[in-house]
Image (cartoon, rainbow, N blue to C red; front, side):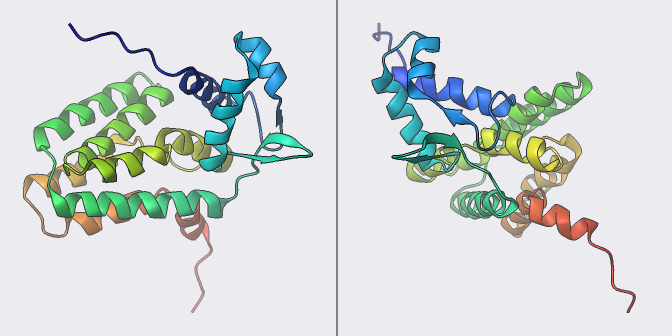
Length: 214
């Protein structure tokens, strides 16, 4: 039998903070006090400090010697840049190897079920799982690791909550992708890229911009 491996304490703390960011417990500019977090979670300050450093790397919080850690005031540009990097990674993934259509349909079924239950959390979770399968199928562990490091699920929730973007979980929007993979469309990478960028706040702004009278 393989030994049971417990996730590092800092990972559990990081997830607790991420959950707080997603559900709105902490908003832009709010302080994240190490001592207070450590007391609430029943841990020492050291793993809290490590977890916060990782969130600084994700650009979700910022830290300074004088002010400590605070939730970043995210802009549409911040989110669009994440979408751009994610789109490039997924486009590269399908160039390396195509995912199983059957596996994608499993996640698509989950999307429809979550939508029917009107569960935004489950819709986002299944939507991210759909795209994770595309990256995982590439067989490139480095690519998958970089994609995972973007914190896709958290950025998706923040995009919806802060900028009221459309949820990336929309099941119908994923049908054309599945169909393209099914027919082995040579342009599926471009379609995938456009699909992802279509959900960025910048794209939403273009859709809402008034048309020229000319």
